[in-house]
Length: 472
Image 1 (tube, rainbow, N blue to C red):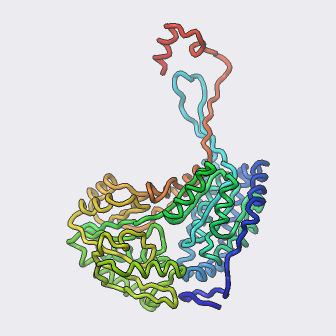
Image 2: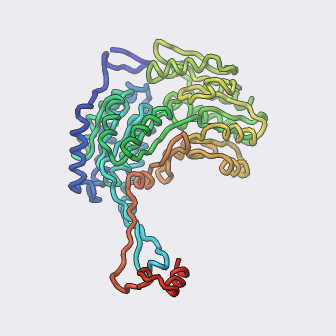
């Protein structure tokens, strides 16, 4: 057996590679969709019920897989991967009938009498490409929207979380319709082969670099994609913030999954009036939250460990907490670095780990300018009591989402869309927005045969043209 930061994995374990099964699997799903299997509301509801049953009955196995792949505690596993998916599925089941209804629209005067409406129809066979950092939430969460919309779905879990990938491949066919929902394991060649099947939509969660490759591959086949990427999410601390609460929420967010979360704050921009006190409270909170825990936190694999270890060199800042690494167990200490160089790798790359730069700024204006000078982030956070500051940040910055005085909560609210903007992603899902992402909005106009006004027919007389000009 091999052990990684407390994670135990059978020696030689490697994810299955299902590339030979790609064409046959997609053909089976296409046949199920073409036969109308996935369209009835009853089928969609059964799949959501099956998903909820799977989460309840296999909770311990899911937690074990997350511990093996990521060293994640059982409590965090339930909140981040199990409870979060259950919340999405319950919300979709409760609202599905309403989402599926035709949406009436008005028509221009020139088309009256008549009726206009939007019908939401499933796209066909869609692909969900999951990510290793939340291997259940980031595959099963999008799956909720895809099956609620009435699609056949193929799931491609991340090969970097092999225990979770194998468990998904084992569980899903037992609880969901195996004729219409499939899991294929493997590396990038499986994903590429799936795109070559000219699927009807794909949702990918991962890094900007890989997202760019996915978009290029999808473009060859005109496959529409939803990209949930990442980037450097800023957190602004204004001078009137409650620093004790701010420090607790920052440390909580940065410790969850060892900071390997796309919406975790990547750096803090602290007003100079409160920066020193904030740093001190962050250090104190780290001691409190980490009492009785190992000094360092587990990192998913050697490649990610080496990358994080490299970020701790040459940053030009002042390390005020942590800074250590343990190569033998692939672990990194929670680290706080004050005022690193703006052109360092630490401040140019997405960190995706338990390292927190804190940059001192002279004003809210400076913080906003700092954010605006960089690519648009997936999330932006503001801590402060001023409504004026909140309005300025909302008005003067662009990001996938904003949370004021907390962190990451928008991601777990199915009533809100979750997605990026610019290089942090394109498209959104969760709740109704996931249903619509995986649906085609079919425009429908219904007219009666009579009256059959001659206005649109030739000849174009001056009188007809005068009337038409008034109608348009």
